Image (cartoon, rainbow, N blue to C red):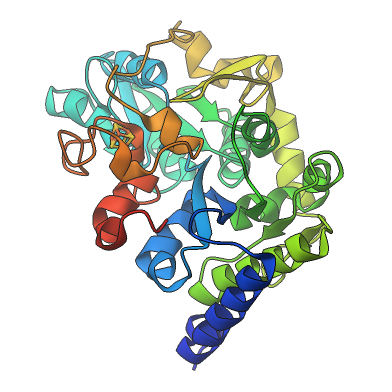
Length: 374
Ligand code: SF4
């Protein structure tokens, strides 16, 4: 038995479900007036649906699916920029697989590849750097996206490119940061959240300290959680306990992976390469101040935005798309008029249907059985 098996233990899971139900009863929560918890990270959204947690937990608990899937919040304008760069015949454009299918206003990267652009899927930014070494006569661009989880590896790749004097590598940065994003969620008018299931991987890098404002200013409990079913259930149980006590605190359920202070070396690499962007556009959420990063002037020669003179175009989402309402918990995925009716994982209209961590894709794959439950 591996150490991980305990986090999938069915008996332990059932016992936690019972104890969660008791806490919900004690709180007086009902289906009409549920306790509303937001899972910030798309990995948790996926776990909740994959393991059927939404169907075994009482309807007096409602999950809101937050904006923590970086593919899901990729704005159309940035995809258009990527396509424009990728269609330059000098360029080998590289990115992670999920980003390939996100719709732009003209086409996705997948469609651009089908039309002849040299676009390659990689598993790490170091794969892109290796391509640059092997193809000195081509410009290799890496599309870096994600929160503080993926940002350190991108930063370290830029530092490696500089150390090796590799001149034909550059980065198109769509990296975003979690704290301004959470502030924007908390400030969303009309949004009621009783507590947060905090992102495990981001917290591994930034630690727990940056979340303190959520307890101190907004008076909400926040539990950083792992991704196995017992992890998620235990974090729900912990959150209900703090709500019952009226004691909003920041806690760490994922201590086996997340150190209290995060990873200082990773943060140092990010700080060396990146600086805040004044404004950053999000799909469905509009612009959130200082929620993204760009490459510092010192590393400008590795900045694809400057090398290829793109960036900044804001393109409105398709009118019928309701990704923004889903991302802020106003609508359930199946309540979007396009859900399964023009928008599906095979033909995504909105980005929430692209990644397996997207709320709409997870609903489509696992959630249809119990509409209204999560
Ligand atoms: S169904 Fe499609 S368009 Fe509607 S919210 Fe989900 S991803 Fe967006």
